[in-house]
Image (cartoon, rainbow, N blue to C red; front, side, top):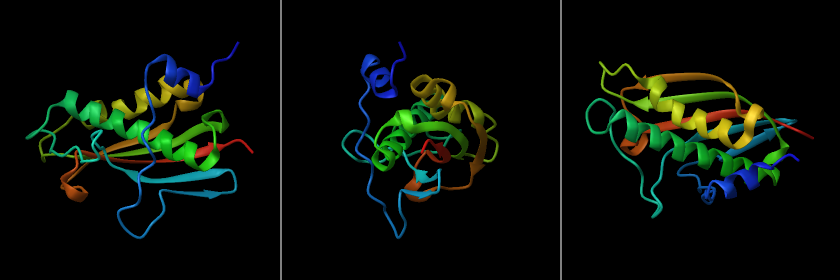
Length: 155
């Protein structure tokens, strides 16, 4: 018997956050044919405040990992809000992870693994993806990470 992504979330005691409202003039996602383009998501605390900080100065790799995991759940929430159920995900095709980091910070991949790990944990094989993990001089509002994705969706 195959477990659905929603059942997997429940078995782990995880609840998807509400898909966030855009902070500017854009949409959180755009479905073009069977490809879903997800806008960059930023990490939020349960109260809606943002997870702020700069890797290599303000927050640890572990805290950055958790912030990226938080964004992974938000990405799943946006996917679900557009396509109805996560079992419609054929594959997470590409993830682009941006890390707010000091110039000498070198562990961007370890941070973005937080997002990658949750996608694979919830979606299984469909969660594996191509990926970039890059450092940025700054990110909107001073958040720790911003992550966007491209998703292949089953018709």
